Image (tube, rainbow, N blue to C red; front, side, top):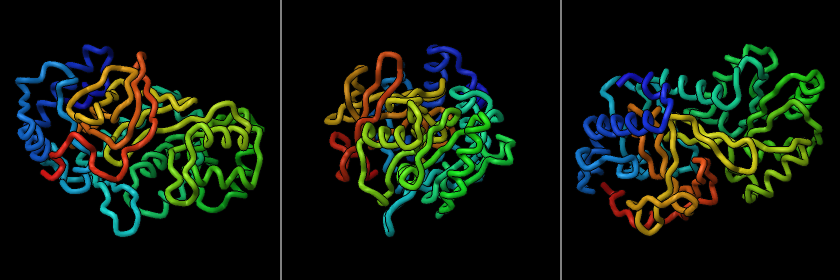
Amino acid sequence: MMRENIFNIQSQEDFTKTTIEVFKHQFKNNRVYRSFCDLLYIHPSDVLTVEQIPFLPIQFFKSRKILSSLDEVQETFTSSGTTGAITSKHFVTDINVYRQSYLKGFAHFYGNIEEYVVLALLPNYLEREGSSLVFMVDDLIRKSKKEASGFYLNNLDELAKKLINLDKNRQKVLLIGVSFALLDLIEKYQFQLKNTIIMETGGMKGRRKELVRQELHQLLQNGFGVDEIHSEYGMTELLSQAYSKGNGVFETPPWMKILTRDTEDALTILPIEKAGGINVIDLANYNSCSFIATQDLGKVHKNSTFEIIGRFDHSDIRGCNLMVL
């Protein structure tokens, strides 16, 4: 399987065919995933549809090395976590697959990166190593080829000045930031931005009280003077991102798909418009695992867009007792 197949999906038929091929590859080459499938008594000969593929609980990335390749690991991405907490590790054997995924994904939704000045307000991510988000944004900053692009940590005054000047000069700007840092910025400054996309990457990361999405987005809309707040849905365990251009409704690139599972029976896939646990197919995870049962709760709509409506609590996901494999 060449990775070009993954990034050249043109139809639902292409997606289904490629997905089943990736499943067979990972069943054969990923020891942890193979053991998981064996415990469920599921073999590739039994799998005729995407919905029949088993989804590996995301917690395995905390306790096992999830690899479908014998190649040398080029990059290890780690999740953020509280002190002493076990973090997820995503071992990447071909970093160019990740680059191809986020560059093609960005172009799919937003066009040519060279049209944008990219400003990043990601203090908590910059303060640690191993962030896949920082890796991606750093590359987008360089690919923008704009001298004004860059990261910001605590220098909010400088960032505010730059935002106002760039917007005044009608330069297209992407400001990507973690929620608490964006709120810090608008508490100091009020903006009326006409040419700037504000993209939040979620979470207060323990710095502020958690807000529901509608409340957070309304505060950010008012503070930045924009009509919509964009969002990025990604995680350490994925090499692809989904994007929302407003109202918390996300779209996936052609090589990524969201399904929902029954919260009482993790092996049952729900019909569209039914809320449940979020399962992700990310074909860019070709060398790790492309089929992941996350701890997010959400709903998939008829046009394949989706919303995140919450998270499972800290207890194990009900209906799946195979996480101690």
